[in-house]
Length: 135
Image 1 (cartoon, one colour):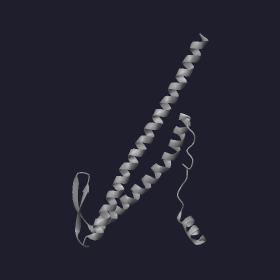
Image 2 (image 1 turned 90 degrees about the vertical axis):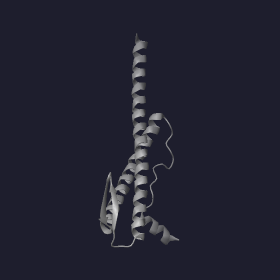
Image 3 (image 1 turned 135 degrees about the horizontal axis):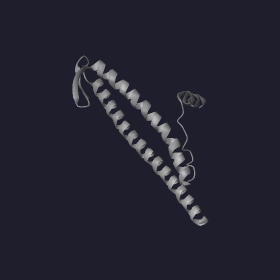
Image 4 (image 1 turned 180 degrees about the horizontal axis):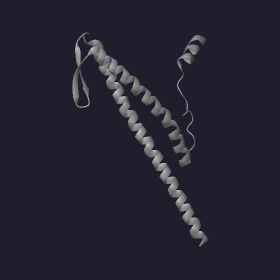
């Protein structure tokens, strides 16, 4: 009887842990897919901004919003693309920040060792200037 209770507790605990791992892994995959899509959007915006710079100024450009095309002034189009680019960059940064702790937690749940250097962040402009001045 006691063995059955222990077996039930062990099985229940294992299933809970597997469910937690599965849920976290699913979130990580979803975040990575979203990062890829946002990168594509950022590249498209970059291409559109470059095309606007090459085009003669003062004209209007056709812009697609979902299934609708509209003709807007180049300045308005550029302003909208730059704002969208800013939003995409912020969203990408947030997703990447949130992804690191999730991956670390998944490694912990799976019993894997911590990934060395995983929590590194890029240097800021102040740090880069300091290093450049130290030469």
